[in-house]
Image (cartoon, rainbow, N blue to C red):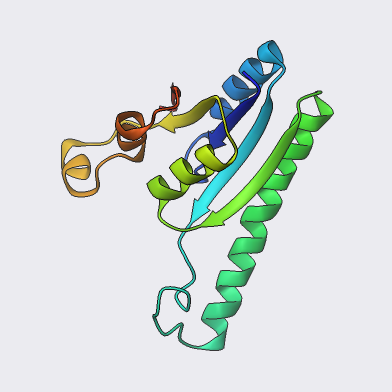
Amino acid sequence: MKHILVAIDFDTNEQKLLNVAFEFAHKFKAKLWLIHITAPDPEFVGYDVGPQYIRDNRASELKREHKILQDYANDLEKKGIKADGLLIQGATIDMIMEEADTLNVDLIAIGRLEHSFLYKAFFGSVTEKIVKTSDIPVLVVPLD
């Protein structure tokens, strides 16, 4: 195992996921690819982006998210683990699978939160869809 993709969602307890990924990377001397998928820019998908302050807020949000990923990667590097942070725009499941293929990863590590039946009925679960569609082994870390 040489490369592990770690899907980071800033809405959850990603530190637990990072700790588990660290253990795997340490044990197998693997590189960690920390990725966060963010919504595509409205201009890119053909929508009017609105006033300048909306574009400014979006740019600030992307910079903040990128900095967090870089901080996580730097912390892992200080512990002796090779790591890179990638901020990618697009559809979450598609982009995770595409990056896993592009980076030739051996394992996908992803967190899982327990959601209500109603939530699952309307939105589904990124984790479940990744597990069902991936040809690459998936490590699911409970974050509850």
